[in-house]
View (cartoon, rainbow, N blue to C red):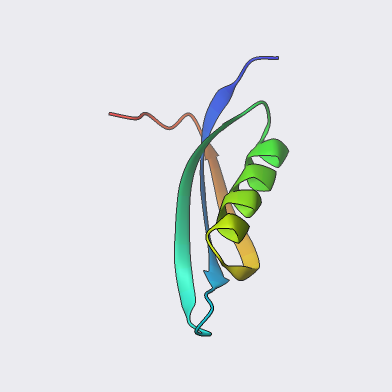
Length: 62
């Protein structure tokens, strides 16, 4: 499969109960895989109640 870059935006709740925005650039084969990777990254960063609201393909890293 061909890997593509996606920008994933959303929000989550940190350990203090505050809502924080998330913005990840992930490399994945599809938008569903990009959302799964963003969820994994947000969980690793200690966020809960994660909501992904926007996924865009073709992000440049410049």
